Amino acid sequence: MMIAKSVRRHNLKTYDEIQDNLQFWLAKTPEERVVAVEFLRRQTYGDPTGLQRVVRVVKRPQR
Image 1 (tube, rainbow, N blue to C red):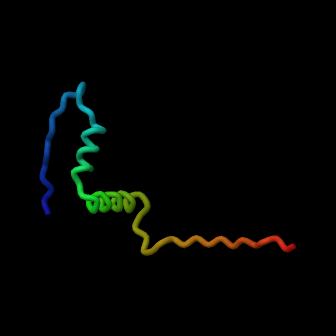
Image 2: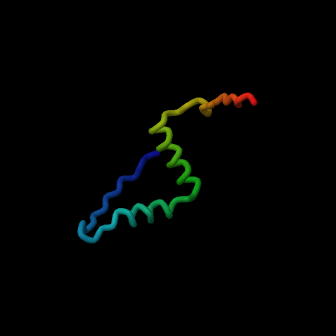
């Protein structure tokens, strides 16, 4: 799959990057958003083969 190149020119005094990013993500489907979040999560935390399990043993005081 080839990624299309795009170039945009903006006036820096009037350009609102936050609004532009919001419009970009609102144009995506929920499935595309989840895929993007999963991609970023894997970049940050790696790709574990399974869920990390945490076990804590708590002993109750004897009465």
